[in-house]
Amino acid sequence: MTNTSSPVIAVRGLGKSFGKLEVLTGIDLDLMPGEVLGVIGPSGSGKSTLIRCLNMMEQPTSGSLTFQGRAVSAKFRGRGGAIGTGELRRKVGMVFQHFNLFPHLSVLGNITAGPVKVLGEPVAKAEAHAMDLLGQVGLADKAQAFPAHLSGGQKQRVAIARALAMRPEVLLLDEVTSALDPELVGEVLAVIRRLAEAGMTMVLVTHEMGFAADVASRVLFMEAGRIAEQGSAEQILRNPTSERLRAFLSRFHS
Amino acid sequence: MTYHWDFYTVLQSFDLLIWGVWTTFLYTVGSILIGIVVGLASCFARLSRFWWLRLLSRSYQELFRCTPLLVQILWAYYALPMLLGISISNTTAGLLTLSLYVGSFYAEIFRGGILAVDKGQREASAAIGMSGVQSMRYIIMPQAIKNMLPAFINQSVIQLKNTSLLYAISLAELTYMTSVVTSETYRPLEAYSMAAILYFAMLFPLTQVADHYERRMRRSD
Image 1: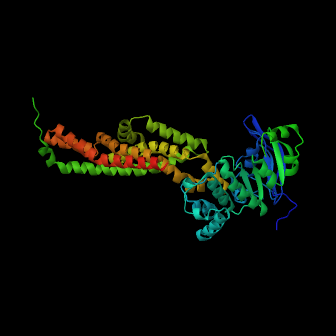
Image 2: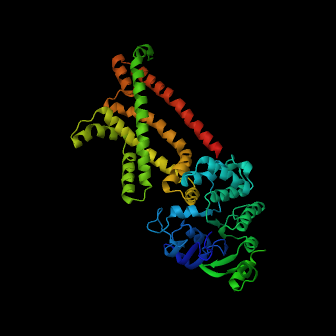
Image 3: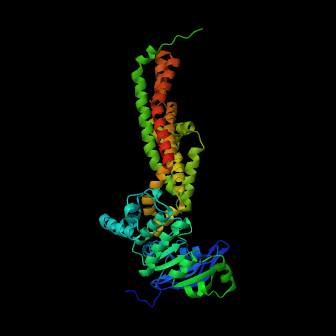
């Protein structure tokens, strides 16, 4: 049973610059177990960079990041009490906007690659777990198919199953429906909703305001590399206070 | 003035030509195998995070790509022994030079194949906790090999033709053996025509295989 009073991921004064370009500044954030954090904001506001810092796909240039109280190291193997990126990414999974499935492996191969090669699980056990996850995302019949033969929505559901196969404690979803045809978005959101209901800790960068309102317990509005506003989904999405947030939300029809 | 073709005389020394074919084949396969090892090493050195490894491999590649193979072969056989104070057989000089030469081209082909793999693949493999080595081994290389196969086969086919330059250091490959046959039969036209036919017979099936693979790759995209 996790300690519900301490954050899974804690961020203090996080900043990220690419050369002279400051993409993130002064980010303070506590991600609590079981919470679903929605991150919204205009293009270039730094939301993707922020979520990518949480599993060290981007290395912050300032500030600190801790996972379950342990400092996060930039190296693959952490030293002392620090957690290395190898271990961090086993516990913090990520699903990408462009799926990034492994084209040379079958759907089953994609999902079992992590458990078998990284966690050292026996193939039979990994495959059984993979079939279970495929059932949960509604794709049990596609186990032997290859990514090239799947629709966008199916690919993304496989990508979610692939991330879940590592039994992560946190799931990061980076605009996972933005590259999908509108009619395929629903099937992916349904999977995410079920995960939220099952208590998975998630960070969701999204443009689906209606979905964020439904599923997120807390929402961050980002602008120009900073957290401009944050609060419950109710506060941020239904009763926005700042002018900028209202202007941003008015562009969406939900 | 008409020329009287006489293949019969040349065909009597056919066993010498076949010896040349076999030697050509050995040097081709040998230099390709060593070249693959050298090429892989140079490729990964070029992609490494250590600047001196990158410099080393870049220098090696540029040296072998910017000098003629013939000059390299002659230098290895005549100049290198003087520099090192040891004797180098023509076999060693020939095989060494051919391997290093093709290795420098392979290194570029391998590097191109690896860089052509979508950046998202490295990210996705990292995101499930794979190390750089695991990612390269299970995710990147399998895809890179598919990318690089046409260029690799092409270069290997060219390598077979490159063995003819070993003639300059009297190695018994096909071109040299043809010159031996010519000096015995005084029939350069027939002898060198025979050599050309033999080279063609070796290379044509290989180019067809190369084309077949290229078509298959394009179809699977």
